[in-house]
Image (tube, rainbow, N blue to C red):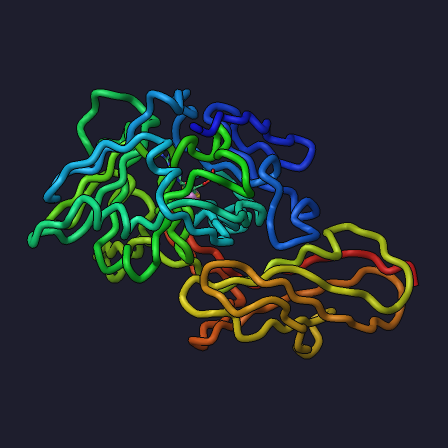
Amino acid sequence: MVSKQVVSAPDRAHLIVRSEDPLNCETQISALRGGTVTPNERFYIRSHFAAPRIEGSSWRLAVGGLVERPLRLGLEEIERLPAQVRTVTLECAGNGRAFLQPKAPGEQWALGAVSTAEWTGVPLADILDRAGLRSEARGAVFKGADGATGQPVGADGRYDRSLTLGEIMDADVLLAYLMNGEPLGAHHGYPLRAIVPGWYGVASVKWLAEIEVVDRPFSGHFQTERYVFESNRNGVIEKEPVRQQRVRALITHPGAGDEIGGDVVSVRGFAWSGTAPVARVDVSVNGGPWQPAELSGSPSTQCWQSWEATVRIDGAGSVTIRARATDAAGRVQPELADWNRLGYGNNAIQEVAFRLRG
Ligand SMILES: Nc1nc2c(c(=O)[nH]1)N[C@H]1C(S)=C(S)[C@@H](COP(=O)(O)O)O[C@H]1N2
Ligand SMILES: [Mo]
């Protein structure tokens, strides 16, 4: 049976809308509290174009280019293939951009452009096996159905992104049709999207229409003009593509401006890193020494882990707390943002101010 598009409408009471058309919203930090997985209606939304309306029954995924057997797969066919389920955290590369000084252009995301879901789908490797890669194959371009039609591949009016074959194998890319057990919502890529675990969300192409296997690097707009860390070294502009999520801890409790009674506070949140599992999270109160937090869940580069630190605070009044994650590769969050022209990858240590009633 073809899964019907359930329009589980974005729950605006728990989202902060950054733009209406296209709809871009981040999740309120308080709405991330609780379990690992974010409810679909509260999952952040980042779209460059209006969400296309797609009829699941007539939709087809085309797999072509440098393959032995070009494929056109319907949703039902894809749903019948052996499925895998993975809990994966998506984070927009622009998450935290609002805190950059000087300001960087683009959506002014605070810290809620990150969410986690349990995704069900077919490993991309299985689909590529069915199509059969030709010996010249080096990578694949993923083409979304959003944006203007009739434009050349890679133009700024289309959402096309590529990965090398090595990146596809290393990241274990999934082509997902269920999000937390429900068909993907209209804003999250119905009927099928790529999920590239550990990478910034940009790689996880929504509303997938076509996969083209190619023999050379792809230089589309969203590959080389956007989603690159641009730096100016002695007048020479260097561009480094955005790839894996940088190590980061997010404080979900207490919330900014909260009023809390007592002198023992449970500081909680999530931590993740796309390059190596999180090794530790430390918490500092009022600029004091770092104290270790306790991490839960299993180490992963695909999914965030929750952490908690119980801290004793002397005296009532305003309190600031900070949380800092370190991953198993020794990467640690910086004190100050690593500023870049387009405002990506700001994983600077977060600080939350709240009040203690004492
Ligand atoms: N087709 C298409 N895929 C896309 C995008 C888009 O605009 N069009 N945005 C990307 C970006 S930048 C992010 S962060 C994620 C966001 O996924 P979400 O809206 O489900 O949270 O989708 C990615 N996939
Ligand atoms: Mo993004």
